[in-house]
Image (tube, helix red, strand yellow):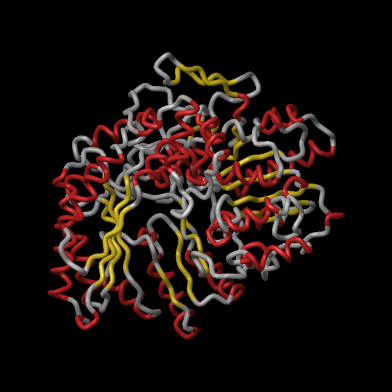
Length: 611
């Protein structure tokens, strides 16, 4: 550690964020590597170290001979101020070397509101922001992750994008880069070659053409680029790399426990959920592989809690088998087993009793909408009776805490639907009064509403988001209908969610807005302490763009999307048909009941997903 860094650390919050040295970190000799990757997470250490995807790819890259991957996180405001004051550039945790000394700078991007952190990290590293200003093979910047299914707002800043799951494509990219470096290729030559790797998108090879009304007329690829880039998937999760000898953080992180991934994809088809569609087809690990990974990860980390990671854990076919085996391991060792992402339509008394064996916690459910009509419109496929039955089972089993998640501003939502949330909560309270087995402790309901954000590759990608003012009217309507202290109601801020919608559906003209906002101080936007909506509105005005054009406008049926050149393997016609069904409050069966013909089967071996 440099003397300069030693002087700075005692002056900032949580200095453990910036020192590295954790158990399980990878250190390699610089003389034995020829490709160095600065693996950047555009948020704080405690957020990034909770990200399973980052841990997986850290291991994948460091398992490659001659490659050294090191971690970089966004510094908190106090640390950034000290770094700028002392001219200390952004550095990687393992070696403490400046990021600008690395061959490749890779970002994993899971949230639109971290875009300003990407630009700010490059600026703090002393690396030119725009791809056209970075010459040669040094400091090539690329990104992957959930947000890259529409990478256009970041197009001016990224040399290329890795689409889909990264275990295999990342190795192919690094192997090609090593060849390019050894043979002293020009940057353009490398970009032409990397664009031929399935799943790689090179933004500079595509030219958007706009119409007079500001909508896209076309996105024209050059001869070096494919017309459409299809995401990559890992077809067999049992044989895929998974980090069981994992990094152990030096401080408490957001998810301070062992996480094991159960399956990818989702059988449900909720019409607002981007992840549910983008991670199709469904692919699951076997209970045997999952058990061995769980035990190995626990023994490596020393954690006393383990949680299963998926979009809908209770849809895992072998959950009962795995839970029984895992509890046999956990209970004698006083390890808590947590199952998040449960659904009200398949939560059983047997599962509840199993969870109690390893320590009671609150139960979390996401009805998303307060009335059956609206739940059908969004294809939630859960009934009020199933929700109440689930709560009855939990309350009779001794649970006294429930977390409930809803959305406001969903397509077709009315005031009746908003008030339906309060009515449903009151019915849950009545279930506790009738069936609760531990009344002395009282009932605690944590109620949260998010502001609906239309996302690419969902049936609601065409929808207009309601205005922030209308969202707050609905918030206040719901607040007025909740008249009990048993409920703690919290809601997401509307300005942040509007910006999320803008960036989610935005085109590459937003690059200028991002750059202007960062220049004027935007950073750490997902943190309430730092988000400043006025900076963003001034940036839009300065660049002559209206945020409502992207967020509050209904897109035309045949309109060219900014993400038109990206494919997740699902048909556009399928999404439109699902949107039409939403307006009729018609549901679509889950994938196990009946295939909806989305197109994801084409990505699976033999054309059948593991639903």
